[in-house]
Length: 235
Ligand code: 6PG
Image (cartoon, rainbow, N blue to C red; front, side):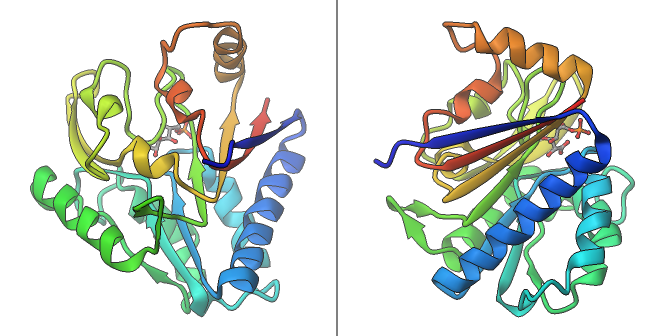
């Protein structure tokens, strides 16, 4: 398995943080289309992507044929697509509405969590090419919570240990909510990944993690992988 390469950009200026992430996102999509005639990408939710989605849409005409782009999500809250907590809702309002030619495959948060997970796993199986026998994304965009979670792999949940299923539903005790999430076999199989993290508390956590020998936080399980990783860390 190709060992993952890793680059780290620590950017204190917010505008530069947004621009760097936007440029990387668009360049990876352009490169994927050039190389493979397609770009299969998975977005994260949360607040960090919001200003970046807004910036991407201002540059979306940057010679990218969005008809060749399939947009997925790494996870979803188990709510309807018009619910304020929905990752799809935010991305749709802030970005997808400006990319009419792109195709998107949302996780159906309005369905029973287990059924939504099975349905999304079937979608990944049907739409994505396989790499190492596992659905292969061209780009996965990951964030991290202040508890070290990524996607909806939260500390103490068994979703982190899932080795076979590609998508699972998970009860997150601390949120008192169900989530649906792509699992590590798929997350660690992407061609490229942007790990986009912003905030003092998260930077402190990354510094703690850097010195850890044991795996204590979910974000630590995204490596080693066969992906080319781009860590973009803002203040
Ligand atoms: C979600 C995201 C999640 C996110 C982190 C960070 O559904 O919330 O997919 O994994 O990346 O929670 O979120 P913030 O950017 O809001 O801190």
